Every structure is written in C-alpha cells, then in structure tokens.
Length: 289
Image (cartoon, rainbow, N blue to C red; front, top):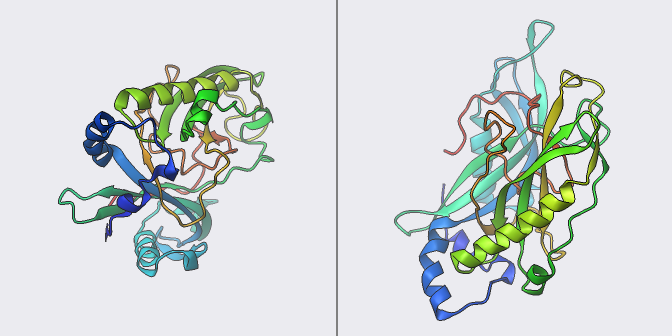
C-alpha cells in the first residue's frame, strides 16, 4: 500500500535526539532514510472456516484509523489462508485473537511510503496459563541515568533461557530499536547501554516453569520479553511510531532462528512469550505483501 510520507511526520522520534551537530545532520540524513521504519500494532479477532479461509475479521477500534488504512488491513487479513484447524480428526471452524504489526518504509522513488503487514501473532500472554513460562519475580531494569538525561528512548527484545528451577540460565538482547537519531557511533553506544541494563536485570529474574502442556518436561525453555524505555510515554492505539531498527543477535543456545519476525512493538511490554511454543493457527499466506 502506498501512503503519504508517514516517516516525515513520525520521525520526530518522540521529540528525542542525541547531541546534534552539522556533522551529525549530514551523516544521519541518508542513514535515517535508509534505516528508519514506522510501525503500528493493531489487534482484532479472526474467524477461520473449515477449509482454512478467513470467514470474518473484526479489527479492534477501527474508528481510530484512517478509513483507507482500516480497509487495507481488512483486505489483507480477509485474503489469508490458514492450515485447517483439526479437532478429533475433523476440520472445524475456529476463532483466534490476532496482533498485527504494520510497517512503513520510504518508497525507492521518494513519492511516499510503502505500508505492509510485517508480522502477526495469534496468541496472547496469559499469566495464569500453566502450559507456559510465567513470572514469579521480574524487577524492571533501571533506566540508565545518562540515557534518561538525554531523553533517549528505545525498545529491547530479550531472549532468555529458563531452566527447570525457574532461574535464568542465559540471556541475550536479541534486538534494540531506537527512537532517537544521532551518528551511528552514538546510536551504537545507546543500543549497547540499553542492552546491558536489560540483560543485567534479567539475570536475576525468577520464573514459574510449565506444569501442563506438551513442553512441561523440557530441559529448558526459551522466552522473549520486550523491555520498553519510553520516559513514561505510551503510544496511543492506531498511531505510528518511528524508530531505527537495530541488528538481530543470535542466541548461542538456539540451533534455529525460529520466530525471527518477532519485534518489540508486536509483543506487549510486560508479557512473556515462549519462543518454542506456536500453538496458534498456522498461517500459510506469506506476510509482507
């Protein structure tokens, strides 16, 4: 979908910026255009027919979106094909919650921004679900004082290995997305400090392992936890947030990159998301069109 210049409107990046100089401006102008994205997370509910086709889609708070954007999302989801849901050997109708991640990037010709559905999740975090890892104690990371002073903001996606005793055996910052602009060396430093603060806090977290479900006897579990540094700000539903996406890091204990489309803005802060448990309906239609 071609859209007016979303990034031109959103790249105030929450009004935050690292110390700016003429050199910074010159060095970052092209980098921002090449690397910046704007994203929006929407929710809704999908009805799936016995043949796997979408028979209905209810987008939450559609009235808060521009009509053409709501129609675009509706058309994308209605065209999806799922693997039929089977119960007791028979295909059945099903209903699933969905979180959608829209991403906008500048078009190569500079005439606007291209919007696409870049991610979809069909599960919601439930702290009472005994088939999943849930939290016992997880104190929020401290905001690094020097980053708070410069009003730096960003999102850290943590990947944790949880042992059978509920302790964190290993943790990596899988990705750090920033909502500040500066020279690449400055942004790298901010990413590293946000990552260090998050990883340091996560090492002391305690979890409750699954006691039911197909993964209850696993030797360990891998979970994703998003951490948001936002100076107390919270984006309103249906608004774009611009950011500079950071590189993805690989967890050394994992043999695959399953769930590589996970993103901090698709996963709600405060939730715990199991990386190796995909118990929602299986989407067959490729995303990103």
